[in-house]
Image 1 (cartoon, rainbow, N blue to C red):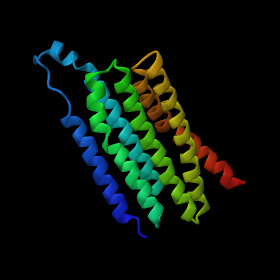
Image 2 (tube, rainbow, N blue to C red):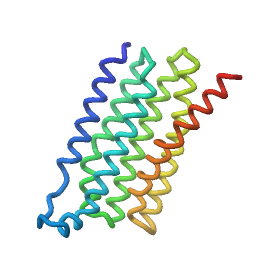
Image 3 (cartoon, one colour):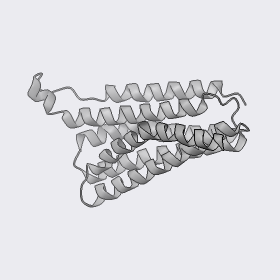
Image 4 (tube, helix red, strand yellow):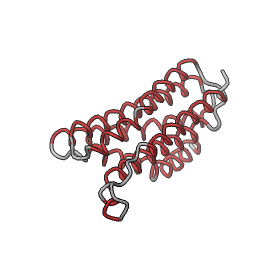
Length: 197
């Protein structure tokens, strides 16, 4: 089936989720620099969630850009991914109000991990129906980097549950950096190398 309605739906849902994030921000109790500084953990939580979701959206956009057809399984994988992503405003609100609470941080990390696992599943469905080898390779490289992303988050969840609660959110930040910065460079190098063989 054609991808256009699915990409439009995904873009719209992610845009709504990212907008809800800012609506959940608390207002300072006193409108001065001290009041604003008191909400630093809330602002940090918002920024991590916003840019992580943005990084995910860019990855999906780049992968789907040249894909023309998708399957029914892709639709379900996409829907599951959006379900987990829709919980981000809720978990962000909880973690920003309870930044040093291990349960809040583990919950945030688990939602981020489940979103990424669903994203990997969605990417995997594209390799099943795509006939263009270059696009298949692009999806496979993306799946490998997302698997590293999941590993980083799982380490963060373990650390958050045992010794350092903020590790849950910090691991999401680190995973976003790993995906956003070197992944595209290595993907370009790896694809060029494989295609030149």
